[in-house]
Structure formats: C-alpha cells, structure tokens
Image 1 (cartoon, rainbow, N blue to C red):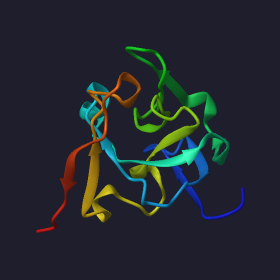
Image 2: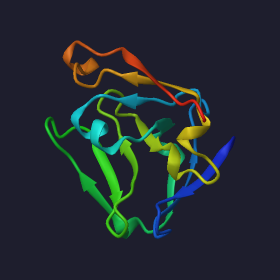
Image 3: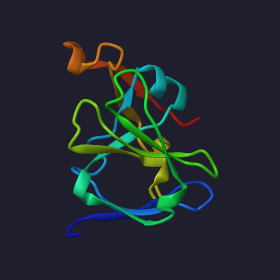
Length: 136
C-alpha cells in the first residue's frame, strides 16, 4: 500500500487491519438505514483493494440483510463493527472511524448523515441531515 495508511482494529484487538482511505476523513458520514441507526458508527471510505486484514480474519463475522448486497463485518469476539462493503458503492468499504488507531468520531464536529432509508440504489438518497458534536 502506498499513501496515507492507517492501522486499526476491533475493541478486543483480535482483528487488526491496515487501510488507505479514499480522501482521509473528508468522506466521514453516518446513515439512516435500520442497521446504521442501531450501530451508530461513523464510516470513512476505502477502496476494496486498500484494506488489508493483518490479524484475526477468522474472527470476522459477516452480516447481511434486506437486499443481501452490503456485507457488514463484525468481530465475533467483542462484537465491534469494523467495516462493510457498501451497497451504494460496492467497490468501496465503509471503515468504522472509531476502529482507526488514535481516531474518534468525536474528533469531527459535523458529520453528514446519508438517507439510507431512501437508498440511492432505489432512486432516493442524498444527505438527510447532520450529526453535530459540541464538547461541553
């Protein structure tokens, strides 16, 4: 991998990966689909070929629902969502920002929230709103 490479992993440390992001944190976003509403993660973008699982591939569990297009990966030991192959852009992964070493979604004051209920593949989509973080 060439370029700005980040290391990351799940909560228990069983899954470790290296990733090169498409455009750094500029791709950060949330989604309103039923799964994203429940998991609450901020995702950043990476091309499929730019994610390398370096430890714990055997700990990753796949979850799919509805159209069975998106592929959501979780550590089966600690339950943390690490990444998913997108339905909207199957050539990309959404990487859980909180899994990147030294990063937190609370570092971002404003995160766009995409309309995943009216999915772009179904003729909808776009920005549904923004999630704001204002430290006390």
